[in-house]
Each structure stands twice: as C-alpha cells, then as structure tokens.
Length: 253
Image 1 (cartoon, rainbow, N blue to C red):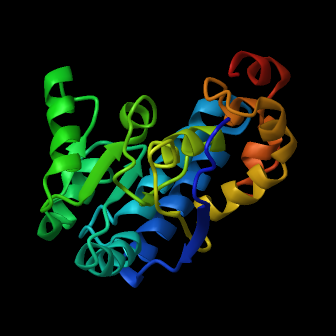
Image 2 (cartoon, rainbow, N blue to C red):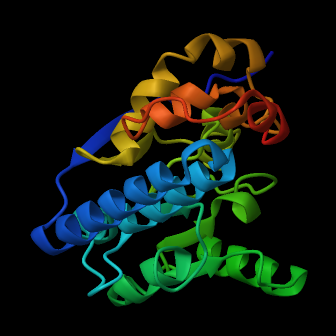
C-alpha cells in the first residue's frame, strides 16, 4: 500500500515587470514582429520560435541592467523561508549568466546558493546534491530544468520555484516531484512565475486551450506541446495573420 504524500500546492504568480525591463521588452517585441512581417511568405516557424525565446529571456532579466521582477519576488520569499529553516529549489530552462541559472545565482549570492546544471560532471553533480542535503547553511539550489528535472531525490526541500515555464507542463511536474516524493514530510509549495502582458501570459492562455493534450499525454515529457500548435496559433501570439505557405507549414514542424 502506497503511503499518502503531503499535499503539493501550486501557486501561479503574475508579476508586472519594471519600467526598464518593460521598455526593453516592448522594443524587442515590436522589432521582432516587424521582422516577421517583412519576411512575408518566406517566414518560417523557426523565426517565430526565435522571437518567443528572446522575449522569454527578457521576461527573466533585462539584458540592459539585469533588472528582474522575478528575482525581486524570489528574494523576498527566500528571506523568510531561509530564516525559518526551509530549503528551496529554483528551476530555469536557461543556463547562461544573462537570463538563466547562472544569472539567478549571481543575484542570489547572499543566500549561498548551489548550482546544478549540465555543465557539471557526475562527481560534481553528486557533490552539489550532497552539500544541499547535509549543509545547514546551503538552503537554496538552482537547477537547469533539463539537467535537474529528473532522477533526483530532493525531499529535503519543500519549496519549488519555476523561474520560467516550459512548453510541456509535464516537464515542470516531473521537476516539482524531485521534492514531492516518498520521504517528504511537509507540504510542498510550488511557485510558478508569469510576467503580465508578455509572451509568457499569452503562451499560458494558448496552452490552457490545449489542456486536452496534457490529459492525453499525462507524463510523457518527451513530447513538446509546441509541436502540437498550428502555425496560426503561433502567429496569433503576435497578432499576425497566417503568412506561411503550405510547404513551409509542413517542412517546419
């Protein structure tokens, strides 16, 4: 008989981005949309995804000055959590020092965070995990979603932050369950960030309409929901009409 796990509570946090971050974001989106329009019938699905990726990165951090409403919120929450003795893990799909794991690490240095990413070898990864589990001073672990989303047992943590979201919610659920598993004795609180009036919010809305796909796929993390979106659904993210010809629609999937 399986033991019942404590509840996992998911909270979606919608944040307004700061003035500097907003200005950079709006400029990047306007320029990107103009470039997509200029391509006309030569536009490719890869062009749309490139713009989506760029905007998602800016939602994490302003490339101009590192401003981040997400970091501001996490910092305030961690001050309380760490002081109360809780451990927390933070996931990002990006790993670089401008928009991803390394950037988060730099901003949260006061908490002495540990980093787990694909750049580490097996011995280093094991060392990071054991330090997180055993060292009372190291209560924050930052992981790349792909490297740390599977295969780890992190029941010592009871708080999970999704700094940015993946196309397939099953990937995020698998990551959350690094903490929500046999041996967990506390409720697991999951925070999922979305920036208001950005590509993140629009993607959330379009994925909500695809909920039936998630139900069918269950935990199949190998399938990206983005591949199930039509060309028009992707173009609609930017208010564009379908400029793709039939050949490109099929070839770019």
